[in-house]
Image (cartoon, rainbow, N blue to C red):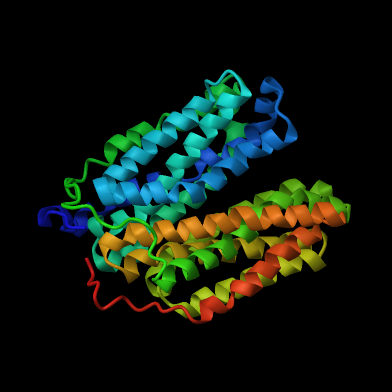
Length: 400
């Protein structure tokens, strides 16, 4: 994929701040549209008479779309470039997200949720593909940490501010709250075109399907599934685990510390990204600690359970950033979107399917811990991949 030379010249340091702000804001919208659903679900369910399964689908359907929509994102990057893809993806996300606040019935609500998930999924490979075109090579790891910090802050903001702050300001209307979270993204879309570079489209059509011959595609994807399945899975089964212990009263504290831990992880990576990204040792250590923290939730109770879950969330957040930051460092800018899309396709497929299969096992046995054991078993199976990752940049793919 060839771009005009003038369009790929990285900005001088003085212009890094506005680029960093744009990356952070785009990162925020990777998660806010998804994570506002859980706190609003009871209100949506009451008005539209949703079943338990459909209420849960408000969150799980977009997560499934994160896997399905990775390929359309890669295709768009190869045809219209990463900046235009990011802008298009955010528009699709706004249409779906705002549409949820206008729907008249359950069917259109699910359609809008799927459209929103598609937009978010297309944003994911566009951001790492954009980094080599907006940033100097030695700033790429920091750029990844910046937009991932925005993403993880979006998780906490969406889940933590919606009910106590935003909804009361909007007359306790869930529809107005959804619109209030969604529509400001249009300002971010417009601002994406302020940096006067990388406006060109690809000079010719390039490959966009995942390169399954590249071992990184599957290896990074399966390891991303390790991080995602344990984080999303433990989040989903937290209440059932505490109820099984007779400690359901600790659920709000557990969810608070569990989710804010990822914010602290992203802040650590803002400081340590350049030193840690691209080093296999840190990937191995964080993966092992993630598994250890998850195992701790099986054997510990009460506040020790919360401490172990919080540790897992913290190190899984660091592992997520370490993995997502690799594609723009390991392959050239033309291949970054393709590798990222393949990684997200595999990773989010695992993040969705492993907890779901664990849940089916728990339903069959009547013990919620078996759902967590399924996630641990998957993680132990793919952990050896971390020890053999080849993190050297391909010699035939020079830095952008």
